[in-house]
Image (cartoon, rainbow, N blue to C red; front, side, top):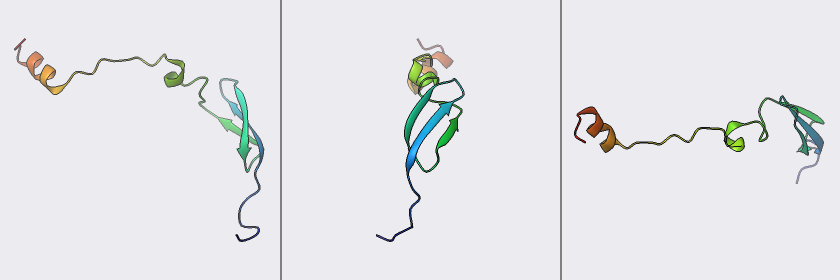
Amino acid sequence: MKKNLHPNQVECTFKCACGATFKAKSNKEEQLLEVCSECHPFYKGSQGNRKKTGNIEKFNKKYNLD
């Protein structure tokens, strides 16, 4: 491996806009985030579970074939 090619990894503190913080390795000591796993709707379970209809159901509904 070549020397002095890769940046040094240090303990980094990630701060989210919601106030959550966590630590990981990075080349900077502090990172600011807009969305994290604490506040993202997908991870919180507040993202709506919409029922997806298929093409056949859409066709039948469009032409009143039900």
